[in-house]
Amino acid sequence: MQYAQVFKGKFLKRPNRFVAHVEMEDGHIEVCHVKNTGRCRELLVPGAAVYLEEGKNPGRKTRFSLIAVEKGERLINMDSQAPNRAAGEWLAQGGLFAPVTLLKPETRYGDSRFDFYGESRKGDILERHFVEVKGVTLEEDGVVRFPDAPTQRGARHLRELCRCQEEGYFAHVLFVVQMEGVSYFAPNEATDPDFAAALREAAAQGVEIRAVDCRVTPDTMTIRQEVPVRL
Image 1 (cartoon, rainbow, N blue to C red):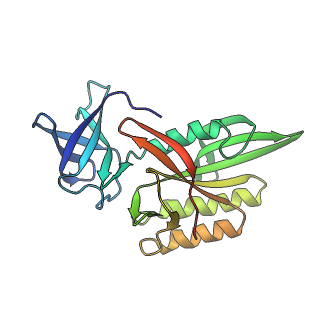
Image 2: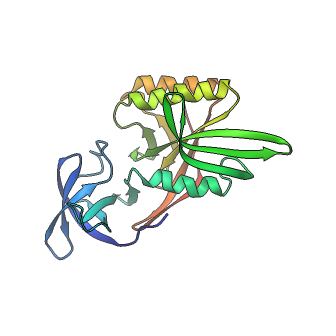
């Protein structure tokens, strides 16, 4: 996935979860939309280099959206829409199942709306897949975790995926790590023990749990390779 117009700046402050103040390279201050409502406290620290996408809608309140940040030597994409966009490209290329005969985003099942529904064929057998995508930006010493804040919705999705599996679908959770070169993925037990328990329960019931990292540049993010999962 690729952004059109990207500019560099310096993060100053985040008055609320929707906006950030950024000093641009020419010295003026922009109030930007933050495309991630998570806490991101370890990422958005004063003085951090950030990257902004220029919006295309002339009627929007802010000209720019904050999409990426430098954390030490790492460049981390923090756009909450980017994982689904990158996953869609990767899935269409057979990343999880192949050959792909159908791929639909945002498909409802039961009380949940999953990120993708897909179909593939093995001979005369039709295989039906539900995929839930989770973007991961929380990193410490090479270990990445999800979530960075409690998420009842996330645990509910996992339990719905167990139902899918029981009813003959192939169910997948894909953690898209929005950076590269990490050691492994693990659920954030300390922050959300219910999600961690639901993830282990899903794995025990046959839901496929996968994590992949991404090659990130200021204006692109592309799924790169598998990351070990430790539950």
